[in-house]
Length: 111
Image (cartoon, rainbow, N blue to C red; front, side, top):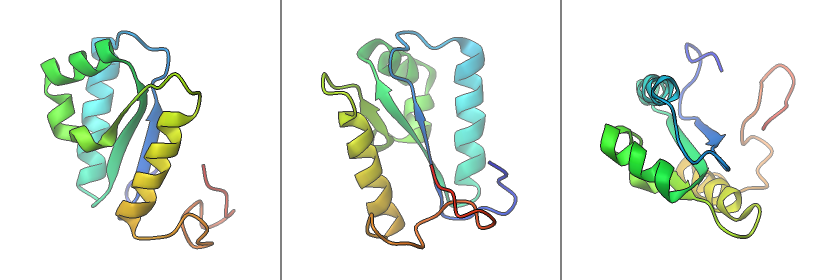
């Protein structure tokens, strides 16, 4: 995502199945969260397991991203994603079925 033209957006990254986050990935998450915040946007981490959450807390990345933007993995596949999508829509102030909710302006594709 090019951030230079971005404002008030949400980026979600799934970490499902990642029991440990390496220092390189941790640094990337930190820099990306900071860059998004500089554009009035936010990063959400989805499907995070307990060990990865502990790592995020120990490194300070949890505080940077915000505990409300960390969605722990659930036994139900898609459970964390559903909660993250609902939280993103609430933060954006748009209902889930709003056709203007995002995506690439050129293609209309959203993820």
